[in-house]
Length: 159
Image (cartoon, rainbow, N blue to C red; front, side, top):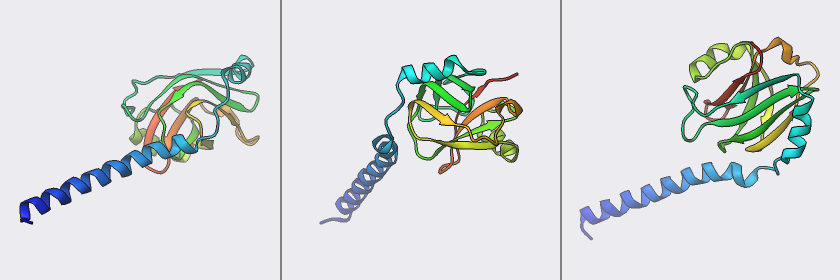
């Protein structure tokens, strides 16, 4: 076998392996996600919410693979999303004293934020707020991918 053919086979196989690995990283959170709460359960929580904000796709550091859209509500010890998040691993929900839409701003303010918990579903979610966290002390909800240090989305719920 000549050198050129061997090199072409190595490169093509490496590319296929890389694409398979990337596809696995993308698909694994979808395959392992628990069932999302139905819209009526989220709507019932939202109806009693004290605060409301919107996740939108066109934030500065959101892109085709990292985004959120829909209405996020906070109240009665629960944060709810009626909407969608781009699937990904290790999503964490933070409350922030300032609205941010970039990784740089998230990292700058992270010490002032509080992590509420893990977001494990991508179509709607309900997340219990620990009793020691007071959402009134913050203004914004941030979804952050802890594993990759990636900004996903944010919503301001208080001015």
